[in-house]
Length: 218
Length: 218
DNA sequence: TTTAATATTTAGGCTTGTCTAAAAATAAAA
DNA sequence: TTTTATTTTTAGACAAGCCTAAATATTAAA
Image 1 (cartoon, chains in turn green, blue, red, purple):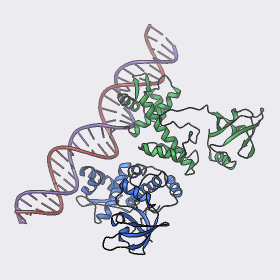
Image 2 (cartoon, protein in one colour; image 1 turned 90 degrees about the vertical axis):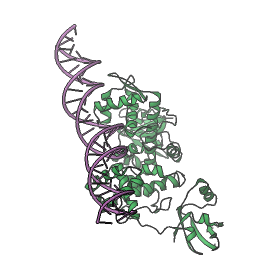
Image 3 (tube, chains in turn yellow, cyan, purple, red; image 1 turned 30 degrees about the vertical axis):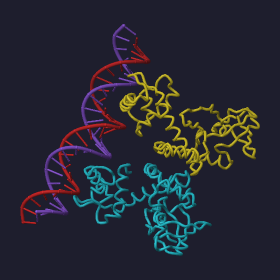
Image 4 (cartoon, chains in turn blue, red, brown, yellow; image 1 turned 135 degrees about the vertical axis):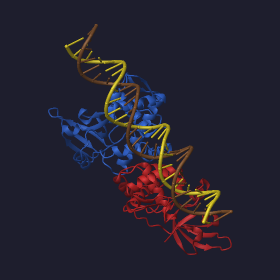
């Protein structure tokens, strides 16, 4: 069993490994967790003894297989709860992070199995990030913004890049939301604006909007 | 802000006050929380300084108004989550306590407002206990067992007394569940067995069953 | 390559919430 | 009412997880 603090370290290191593949430095962890490097050293040494990560003094750290599994599971829970908060409790995409940060530590395998079922096995959270499966496998998507799509390409909206309330309201009004299928009908190259198909409607959107929407190409 | 441990003490004392109205003893709290009396003394003194309870050495403790409000809010959250687990995630009544024990400490007013909304403002948890309102008022019901009802009385099933899996399955099969309206059609006084109306069906049940069902008289 | 700057670790300390053992107060029994 | 038993409190200690300050490695610059 891992404590809340331990789970948070594992999760953070998991994320940082994407960026620092050869080893995550003490200070990188400290920065991300808003804590002091000395605290990180303490915890990393403790986690190394528990064999969830490998650590060489001054050389940084990397998760072991079991460490990765634990971290992926925490992330899975976090993202499933985010889906719940948005899809069932009508929170906005940008309001759910702090709450999910707490919910991700609730201990119950069965709870997550049933929550996943209740949400109909979602594959992405409201920010468009993939939800790890039960085995801890994450299938990272080639996350593109709508602005990167070409004419006639289509995909599913899986999230937003920057999410101000005004922007979310703009999207709501136009029925653009997570899971919605979008097709590029026309693209203007001088300003990147485009005509898109969303549900039954055709919309004209600026490049600024298109650049803020994450799309999963299908 | 109160820590997880502090919230648990307040909640426990709140419950114990129903039984020990003139003051809750250190050992009663220690018993209920499965901790040592010396630990209780420490915490109670700390909480007294925070003015959420009044405490006189050797004389026990009672919650202040603000202490009661905090405790009621934790209980509100606990019971709302229990409703969620049973009504939405299909847990059995007897499986939800430990999970709710964790969920009750999630910090977000907005979350509880929306959860309450999502569950359509339930008044009772799956064990038939009343859910405190947002102001912390609890309206305790005169919780009777079905066996205490007389002929022609009717009420809503709000919970079970003892909940073995077999018993819950017995109930499921007969469509007896929380929120279900039950009417006593006939009652045999020599053994307490009764004929009841449940939904469209009439059922004959023994006193043993009737004694295990909590009913809210309407 | 030697020096300076930066990163990391160690040492020691603090807070929270728990514990054991001993002291003190209260309650019960003789 | 005095003694005994029980309850409660105090004192001192410990683990987790954090901190600051000092010591040690590593990296970058001269």
